[in-house]
Image 1 (cartoon, rainbow, N blue to C red):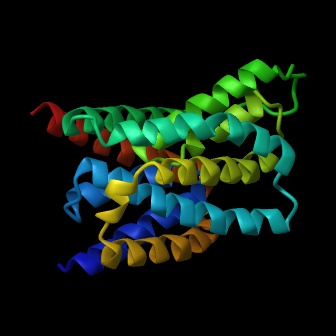
Image 2 (image 1 turned 30 degrees about the vertical axis):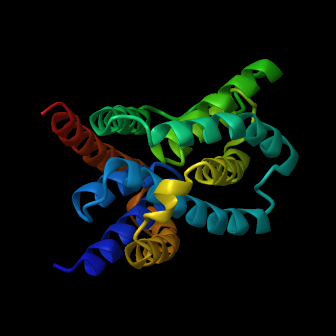
Length: 249
């Protein structure tokens, strides 16, 4: 099977997951780039950031048209993560490949566990918004995005609900602003690895992911979000286990 066909297929799966679940799909991009398309872990995290940036900006536009983005609050949340994202992006290229792979496997497992657990409660109690906690959370999410090339929607959405007291609809839309900002900040410090990205594969991968995201929304309506989350979580756990074994082997 040609690399182009694999890139299109993998991109479509990533996009379907993003569109259907609202986060977590980008966690599949890195292992797909490594094991299907032959990228090194460092190059895969850089390429994933490009894919995440393009898909999140596209989805952000769609959510903004419905008024589901809180620009000011989201901008402040994102601003706290810009420097950590840039610093982590610069550090990622210097980490040993097995360490980067093992770290990504741990994050993939965390994403799977998050999806198997019930979502954060919304509207049943008052939440005190603490600026220091919001800034700390934003910084941590920025570092995660910069280091591992994941959008972090599976963490950003719950953080905006529980830490910043957003309702779920606004949290999903605003998380895309945070993800896009952090991804761009990280890419800015990855000059060397960005130059080595195979655009002949990344471009069709990204295009398929963007198109797949629109189909994912319709898929969620037909199949049901809970069932999709459980299926995707099991897949992520399998991927995480495989990557961990590969890292320590």
